[in-house]
Image 1 (cartoon, rainbow, N blue to C red):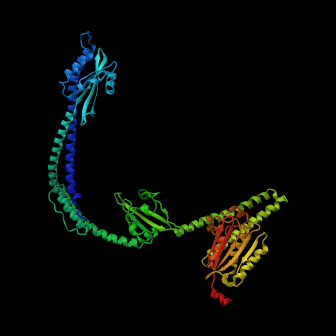
Image 2 (cartoon, one colour):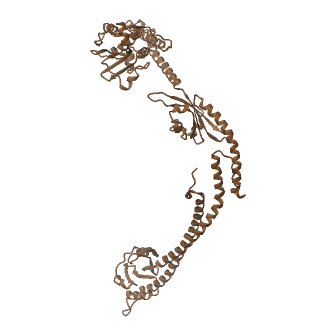
Image 3 (cartoon, rainbow, N blue to C red):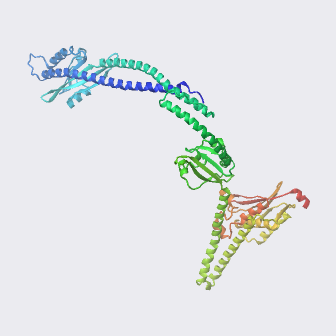
Length: 612
């Protein structure tokens, strides 16, 4: 384990926390003290200001309502004299203006340099609000006309006479002195806080050492225990809480030593059992992280042990969208996992079991994986086969029953309808017979003891004879084109089985060829095989369906196939027979242009030379 750096040690953290607590406490006290002092100073200032303003308002009110003779000074001159006498006694007041409420004109100002504004209309919103609302309006503003912007108190006080507002006193007072005093007080507080923090830090360092020293000893003991050494004991410095923790740590060391020996033995047994299991096993901790995975499970999931360990089980199993780890803990049924790809099918069944203590505490989860790919494939094929056979048999039987019921109800006596009904019944019966024969043929091909009666034949001659038979019996206007080598090509095949393959393929080509169409037969020699192809000019097969036409009961156009009497098993039988000859069969098609079916047969030039 790496040594803990100074800036990450609990020693430093303890000192920082201790200092921060003192700092926060002093800051709270300081903020409260400064805020309260500031509010008190401002309140005292405003009260003092209001008292002086009230006296001025009283004097101005008398001058504004006073009746004047010709020899008496005018109202403006009397107000100017009042303001001149008032200014020296109020050194903190910068300017006082008197406004007439009737026309909002300035009657006088105490500032000698602004005497030119006397008689002008006011523009300050604060004065208008004070006159309109009949109450004092005051606030702190910044005087930007000075070299250094200073804060000033601006107040407008209405002048009442017999209950009506006849004017207002607009006053500008200096408050920067109050904020200067507050700045000095803040400086004193900050200095005191800094001195207190220094002493607090020193005291915190001393306290931290007494706490961290036994903890450091326990850390050393824990490091020794990680190496498997349980003989060392922690030194107990005192009988306080940390001392009791040290004694408990020593007891724990002894218990761990005993438990480790027991666990190692059980772990070896369990590891041996899990390693030799054929099923996949995954174990997790109580948070769903994988802590154990055996080789079969890693192979099934195609992951390495290093990748799987510490990963989430729901992620490894691909269950993130459907399950959470808590859902898996409650899952009683098996969960089917489909890891199939285009190249390789893989279906797993996962059974989950909770690792739980007697107290009910969940320690983790165990998942057992079974490979059920083959079982699922067989079961799916069985279900599909039964469904298809049932459907194929039900269709002709339903048709036959309908016609037979019609005949029984009296249609038998109708000379025109009865033969048609009987012919349809006969056709459906023959279709059922063909279906049963095809099913029997497939059943034989599926048997493990199935054998081919192979013999050497000239495939060129043999292929031409098969084509001749169809050319003689065809009732459509279809042209046959042969691209078959004239030279003999000897292959070893079961004559009957390959004849059935060709019959099925050629029959399909003739069924789906339009009138006037062309069917082309080709044989091409390769190094180790011959490639036989039969092409038509029919409707073609959609690209996504070409690979499915060799599946049992698969039809591209079901309605038309049934109308033409197909069972959906012809190409499936052809595939089984070609593969029994160690060949391959496939198709290529373009919609609207036609389809070509290819199949190969093993071909040995050396053997051909011997036969020729």
